[in-house]
Length: 448
Image (cartoon, rainbow, N blue to C red):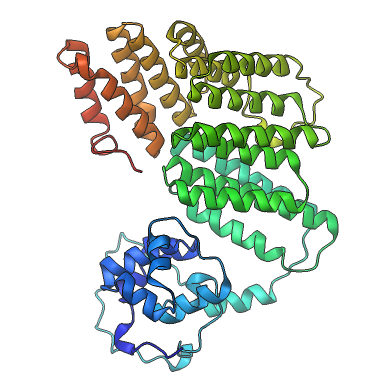
């Protein structure tokens, strides 16, 4: 296709913006197209023309209804919008000038930085990075896989404490690194290990998008995780991913989808060899959530009973996969309470959530915020206004410590439930504390 005129190049300020860089790294073309429209005046019809796409296809990408995955399409976007190849994980494009021939304007004399501000270390350019990667030692060992697994465990810990928004670029970068390693010939055990790690990183990326209520992106990464796990026939992990997608469907008010996804998860787990009771208990509880969202009391109670029966069979000798270790007794109890709460059974839910909250680790800021809000909601349903507002105040400190649109969404829902009582002194005090602790997170409407 003919090259776009040089005057149509994107501004340097956009190409160096961290938001644009992350969008390119994750190949989030919906966000890229929005950015080039608002920051460079390249409207969707122009994007379609320059990238040899149909306007309807561009519109679907912007709306989040379509993903662009084919390499030839990605190359056309790079060429049409003049996005340097390395930003999208491509080789240097033909229109990019060689580094040593690039013409740069005369630089102004720079003012030295203050003495108390250290100079930034010089970093190699993208071309040098590529050369060094080619020359690097690519022989992997079991210790390499152990190190990658350790980093995943650390990512999850930090996600619980602070949220995944700031972690996402690092996680995506490591995911692409591991996927790149899979392109080379390796022994079967090593390939299986890399597939497993890539699947976990893709699920973690999907989880960070889910927690940010960016559901289309979350679904794309969950689907990638599912494919990576399927490549090595890891049915337990496939069940885990499907359970995550089921939970997301409950947040999107798609209870039918939630039930179908968790039923598929349980089928995968039953077909897997050596599925542990802890995994089956976790899946049964996700089934309870789906039934509760549908308002099916008897099926919810049956799934809760199944979860507790499975959990009672857990042995210290079980070969539990690391990703299910979080499902301990406090988690079983709090999820049981939440399932009852979703059914409107506040009298059953309140003592369970309160008990689990007392036992929950204080470093899990997001979990503590969620569960305190759920406890407040059940107390409000029982007419305990003062207790509900006091409990909701306890949720504010952990909510402020973690970046989570899901937490903010739960707080907004609690505020809506508090609306009939907003003139009461307890509600007035809570809203004042809320505005002070979280002035931006709970203002406006939740993300779609």
